[in-house]
Amino acid sequence: MEKVPVKTNRAGEAAPGASPSKRTRGSRMARSQLRTAVIFLAPAVLAIALLRLLPFGEAVWDTLFKSEGFGVLAEEKFAGLENYVTLFTDVSFLQTLGRTVVFNLIINPLQIALAMAVSVLMTRKMFGRGLWRTAVFLPSTIPLVGSSVAWGIALRPDGPVNALLGLFGIGSQPFFTSSHQALASIILVASWIGIGHWMIFLIGGLNSVNQELYEAASIDGANGWRTFWSLTVPLMRRPLLFVLVADTVANFVLFVPMQMLTNGGPENSTTVLMFDVYQRTYTFSEPHIGAAATVVLTVIMIIIVSIQFRLLGERDK
Image (tube, rainbow, N blue to C red; front, side):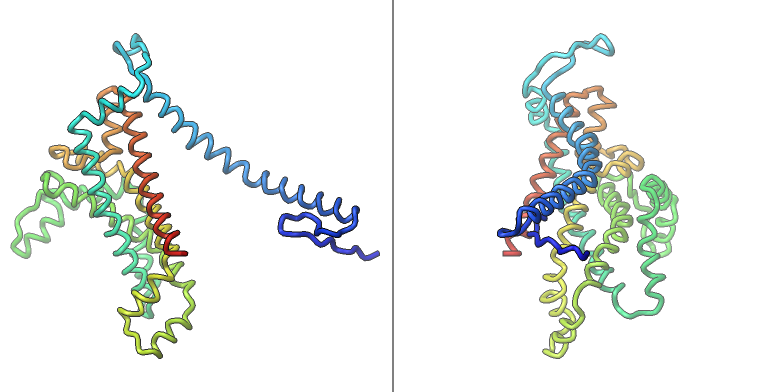
């Protein structure tokens, strides 16, 4: 006997007016769908709770205490907001905070603009396009530690980059030993890795744009620059937002190049918040103040990411 399908709404519930047996069957279907959703989502929710929310909650709790004494004999005492007061009255922390904001204001637009430019170029018809894409993407497959070692060798005073500059009559540059060049050199290392990584996401977005729109723009006489600003950029808003948010978070917690290449120097010129947290916690043995700096870093990231999402939401209306 052929079964009569039960009409259900989007939630899997039986439609109004259905018979009691159909309502029961629809209710079972809804419960089954809910059970399936819970089973598939539970591992991800559990991982987020255990690996993200719980450690952050512990970090917030740690900021309310301070240690008195040394080593295992140190006594934990409730300190309220004293650790935050200590941070925000510390001139070096305020300088680090400002340096971190400036670092991100430079590196994020720079990486996204270059990744977008390369993505547009890599979606054009050109000889060896796949080979060029691989060449640009390859640096992002190298671990950050390996990339930092390679650039540390390339940019040292007697390295190949300075040798190449010497051919053009330019003197040896103190890339990682000058307080005026160290942060820019870190930006170069991070961008060498980041541009190829974000390019992949942007190429995916560009390939999803309806090509008929470009043909229509061409028929209307729009040049390449006008087509890019009036057609490509608006249609790439969501991929760009994803890349912007992910890139912002990645650069706020960037740590390896600073630790390996400059150790936060010279003259603290490459000390950003993430490296400052490491120093306070493990070098200066101030875990509670380090936890407070972590909370400040997280709050700043949440505020900036919220602004980025808010800007996109307003544009979608």
